[in-house]
Image 1: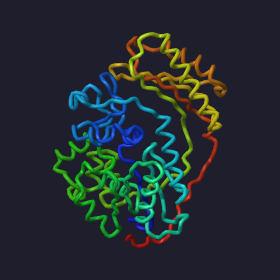
Image 2 (image 1 turned 30 degrees about the vertical axis):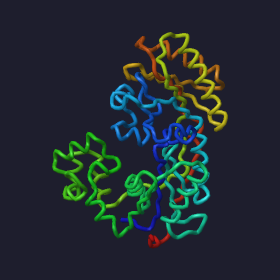
Image 3 (image 1 turned 180 degrees about the vertical axis):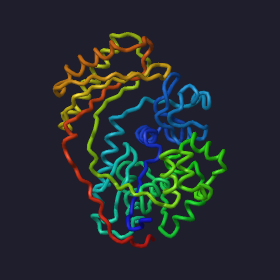
Image 4 (image 1 turned 90 degrees about the vertical axis):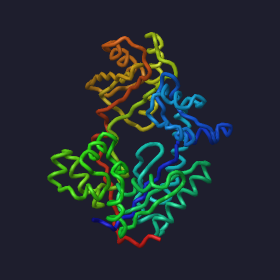
Length: 360
């Protein structure tokens, strides 16, 4: 087990919902979801809403049944991205080894850091303090020797807390950890493990590598390692971007083609702006359609030349739309560009390693 790294996982608390409650104080303390409604899906739920059993990805209709006085607000992704950029700027004050997972969470390798602070726990506290001072939002953090352990730890004292798993505590901590708390083990796999009388790390540890691979395929080796605190994945600060996309979920389902084309034109414009900002070009355009019944259809077109402008994107998107197999109400449209010019660029992420100092 490698114990010479200091990894922090920072996770914002109910990020989208918390942004809404911060920006609109009248929403504080109330059960709230971002997205949803009768025909949508919950993108985020406030902690007050979670008390009613409401979770992200839950159909809005079910959420409203659980809490009839639930407040439903439209997502404001531009605002969430703006705050996410503020938060990442704070991360980069401490280290350049930052691996964002989404707008609201990231891994940081602070083994060697710009502040020359030995304690990763102290760095996590300072980051959380800065986030609150500059955005008014709270964050939770997990600290340990690898990404897996840091991720598990960050969920341990939510909201607005942090948990450190010291090298000397790893084996005991993992043996006592309920199997459903393992990052990477979903509900279906957890249920299968329960049927096999695997309820916590100790029970998982009793299984041989061969048995776990037989039961769970390639994932078996992952489970065998992480229960022993072994996870070699480094914080990838410079990942080569493989696609750029824009999606829009509609408050009301789109029923006619004219409205679909209007939205595709807007999405094409947004996608082109992102491409120009990032100085990226691509040759493969994919149209994504999610229907009212949540079925998803995608169709792609690849051309020899890079897509050059929003008109080219829009005209191709319309042709892809015409190939769709269904005429049903549309709740989401998305366009993404892949086969990018970034594929040719080689970016190297260097993992710095120094002896692991004692946590506080």
